[in-house]
Image (cartoon, rainbow, N blue to C red; front, side):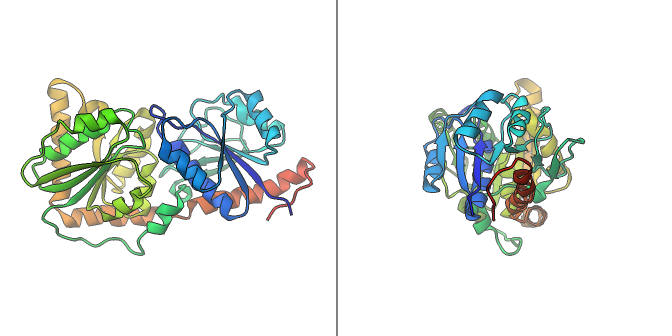
Length: 359
């Protein structure tokens, strides 16, 4: 019985962020658990922890083909059966070219298929809806892609309301914090005046330098830590998490974390609005509003500080957010996605005359 060979095409770096790589890593773990051979194709820049995560799992990292022809050539050279495309930058024609070459193609999207012609589409965002597309659709947070470390840390039940005099707060904004949200939200948190033990995950030296210039108030402690594979543990230990509304949203939900999110980039806006509207997280607004000059900026920061103060001072409010989040993402999304791939690849192999058979 031949081994299914899977490629994942994604990039990560200081400007791109790490969301695409993190969710591809979760998918890779599931394929590996089922005996598949997995490789990543793309650029991983200045992220030692990310390359270490790949190496620890025995996942090869290869240059990322850009054009449709190069994608097909890479798939042939590595004898791939499946290629996962997770990028906002690749030529959308790549998916159709791969299909025409007999390579099963899964496109991971966030609200917009970008005209890709894939066999399977995945949009893991809460309440997601995709227009009619030629392939099969997997939509909604029931398909959220979560890493082993997150699923293993998921509590058996939602956390109870617990009163603490100095809440432990965790703040992180993606693997690189490309837009510099950490200093802005640290200042907003401290402006609440509420005692707290604040841990900020810092992805770049310039962010750390700016944080060192911030002076906490009475009863407030700020410490910084580098990006870490222990993030799920930090999340479960925190009384409140402040983060960007990216792929980490689903990790926070799975872990039942009481969270307040900020919308950092435009493509987060729709998902951010949905999770706030349904009470899965609190909303702090959009980063451009929080960094605006003059009265608009002061007004936005004051509103965010009021929201945070309300959460810091109310264990029942935090517990209510945590319970709704925990019940929304069960940690089994990646298994459902890989089930769909295996169900589809078998007949695809027959159609293209492959000699392989898979588990």
